[in-house]
Image (cartoon, rainbow, N blue to C red; front, side, top):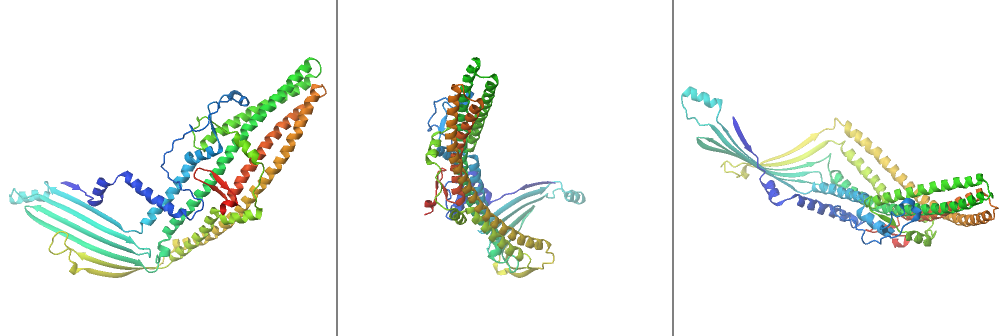
Length: 563
């Protein structure tokens, strides 16, 4: 037996092959997803207007100033920053918000949440379908034909041949009340080819309406998945906005940390030079018999330790600079250096603190923190799921209405007999005798509600503690700065006196070593306290909810922005 079959998807495939391309599907998905994001944007203060995920942006450092200086405090890498692009803090923020891989990932997560929502919305629009198929079948080796030839002696019995085709057109519309409306038109046509031609066709037009009356009844139950998808996109948009603030603070913090590493290497180099100068003087004194070899050895040991600290500081600086490149979206081999003028700017700013009390700050954070609103909304989500789970315990009672129009007796293809339409109305009852799963889901929903409530209260306390922590860190940095200023002044006097006494041959080597090491540490602590205060202040405004970041990563801070 030899059978050939050919399936034809008449309408949608023809349209797809001729009109649709992969690119058109992508554009359609983008249009719906970005529209969904735009609809939620007004509900999220400070949201970004730039969430395009496929926009290709090449890194361009040509507009930046090029460094031409060599830096001795970098030792063997003194010339490594020649021809390096000097990146200011604003430049770093702009590069990060345009090219960072972390930032791109967050945009994609937001887009995917919106993309998921488009499908949940799609469930409640009319959906059409169309399909068709055709067969051609014949049999040249049929055993029955052979037996008839042998029995009757007739040699020209026709072989078995037939053609078959069918089409189906349908439409479906889900109602937000839980019901569904469906319409389907089918048509089957068969032609037998056995000498004389005969035909046979069937068709039907069936329309149906179903509506749950108990379980799954009502828009609150039916549209729960859609409502949650809508809210999930809002949550993701809040998370993205929060991420942008965190990311801006992270870039600034790492920027200042790299500057601190650089300044530390500079301080250690200056301390090493001062120690070596003292060592040369003491070695000259020792040659004249004015000091002992033991005292010179102590200074030599101090010089070796200072050299090791200097070398380690250079390694930390270069490693952190390389990590910073990756953070802002550059390649590891891009040659950049950070702008020393940024240190001068924060030094001029000094230790200014926010003009707001701690109580006001905590209250402001409760009012403005987007993540706290999300935790509260999740409590409401859990409450809705209790209602859904309780509804699932009810009996299922579904109303169904069906109208079926048969094929016309004239056997004309596609002709229907509306006069003989059959109408059917029915009720389907399903008693909840096996409800173990539904019972467990209901109990779980009650526990989830309690857990969501605790999570909200915990988030509330953590937000208050975040504000308190950054407030304390600002105070600590301010006090550290005051102490470091005094410490630098004291140790400068100690170094000066130790040097004068040493030149007169009256000095003590240990005093020289200690005063120089303490001066180096005090200078480093001074810079560190400036940077720590500046970072803590940024984090304070972020945690209070009053740090506003634009699409290039530039921020504005303070209460004035709320007005």
